[in-house]
Structure formats: structure tokens, C-alpha cells
Length: 214
Image 1 (cartoon, one colour):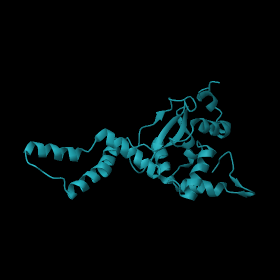
Image 2: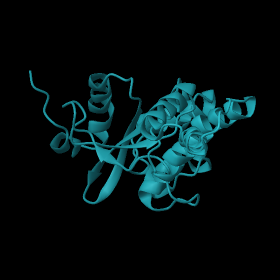
Image 3: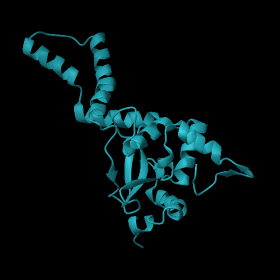
Image 4: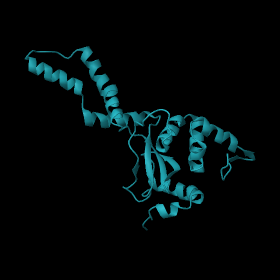
């Protein structure tokens, strides 16, 4: 594969091994040519350490490229960064991370949005019947299932699953993939990494990145 850089571990050239893994997780050669060395190393590290599922990340990228074989994405639609200046001008797409914190965040938001519709229906039914009814062990199981599985499915069906970030730029109608990130990451540090590594590879980023005020 013709790429403009090499991945070295001491004196050992790891480029072929790393690029082979990138193809193995589902990325295409054309996409890899528009992917920063930073993101490739992040994906390689996740593959080796199993800290994240790189296949899920690669599939979200494939969705952005219109080449996914697994169907439509169930995470939030791509959006531009706009709250802080550090990443303004860039885009991000969510991917579902491996940590329990990602599930917890989604379920908390879902509970606030949807409530517990099955429990609410049971309460309304009891009120309308005029009968005195008691909360049973079966009701507890039903509420727990609806709070977790039911609300997760509702959020997924509305394509509102949130997670970690695939950070990318759009240039001349194509996506250029820069870095992975998390909601808890310092956006100033993400900007520093992008400037230190990605701008050299993709010089047009100097025209896209928002200037940082002094």
C-alpha cells in the first residue's frame, strides 16, 4: 500500500503489519490514505490492547464513507464541533465505546427522555380499574428490563446512541480522519495533538481549524 510514512519500533519497520491489521478490521485502502498516522496508531493500539473494539470504530468510519456492510449506524449523526474553539471547524461521529461509562451515560439520558413507559402503563391500568394492586417481584423484573433493555432499544432506534468520538475534517468533499477522542478528553490537548501530527500530513487543516484566541 502506498502511504507517505512508516511506523517504526526501534529499528523494526512495523508498517506492513499495522496496515494489514487496518485492512483486517474493515478499513479500505482508499480510506487509509485519508487517515492520519495518529488515528492509525490509535486503532492499532486498541487492537493490540483490546481497550476498545476497533471493528466498531472501523464500521462507523465505513458508514461515513458509505461502504458499511453492517447496515445503518445507530449512533448520533455527524456534527461539527461548535461549543469550544479548539476543535471548531472539525467534525465528529460517535462510536460506541467499550467502557461501562458509555452504557451508563446513554441509559441515564434515555431514562430522562423516555421514563419507564411499561411501569406508567401498569399504574394507569390499576388506577382505571379501581382495584387495589401490589407491586410484585415480576413487576420489579419488568421495570428493570424496561429501564435497561427497553430504553436502550428506544435510543438506538432513534439513532441517538452516544459514545466516543471519531474526529475528522471535510476537504474538497472527502473525509480526512484525524484522531479518536472522548467526551472527558481535554479539547485543548486534542487540538495540540492534531496540530503536532496531522497538520504536517494534511496542510489544508490550517485553513479549517479555528484560530485560538490569546
